[in-house]
Length: 74
Image (cartoon, rainbow, N blue to C red; front, side):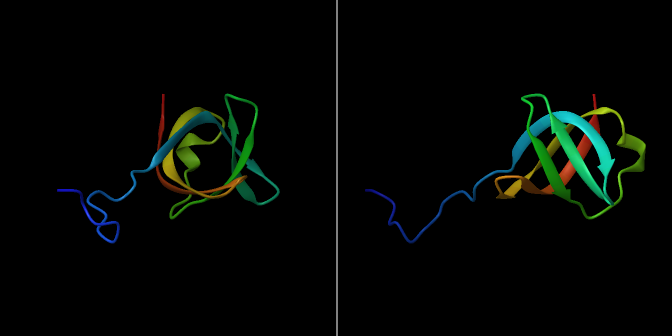
């Protein structure tokens, strides 16, 4: 029996990006490995990760804007 369209069995999972975290014009941005620059909305200031290669978990809010849920250096 198919699941009705009104029932979402699993919410969409967060996406991930990798790149270098930098501070730019008062905001945090991710210089992605693929060349994109993504502005970030973050619940905390990630001072430990600035200037490092990071893996970002979050959700896109627009083409060049993401809401970060987690970040870690690698």
